[in-house]
Amino acid sequence: MGNSLYIDTEFNGFGGELMSMALVSDDGREWYQVLPEPRVFNEWVFENVFPHLGKEPVDRETFRLSLKVFLEQFDDPTIYADWYTDLALFFGAFAGKDHERSFSFPCTAVLLKDVPELHPEVRHNALSDARALRDWHMASLPSW
Picture 1: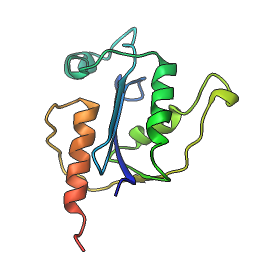
Picture 2: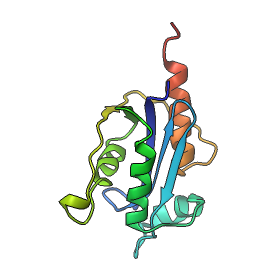
Picture 3: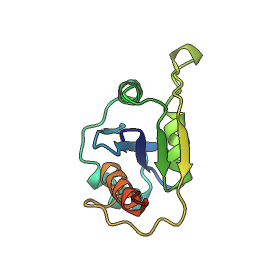
Picture 4: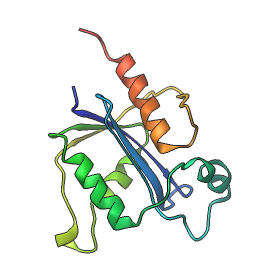
């Protein structure tokens, strides 16, 4: 194993800026970072997401570089998501201030369908949600 990653993000309302992102692997490795809070919060996000971030924020460049370091542990993984915005924000995180400071990472992205309502340990926390997605998906795979 060790070649599947499950992603979840939290963002400031529909179409809003990224607030946090988590990736968990099928073998238990995890990455979770939080970005500085938005200047203006979506009211629902302020009440339901912000209190559950659970980690001090880092600046965007630290976020990006730590993501790159985490991803470099994997050889062409499959990234699983249950919402398209998670994948859009994941790929958007590769962008640096210019082309030279951006990075590329070979992977396959899969948007899962028919994902039931998951019951993470901490609702609206990207790390907890990514763990729940991984656990559900791995349990739903056929055992050969």
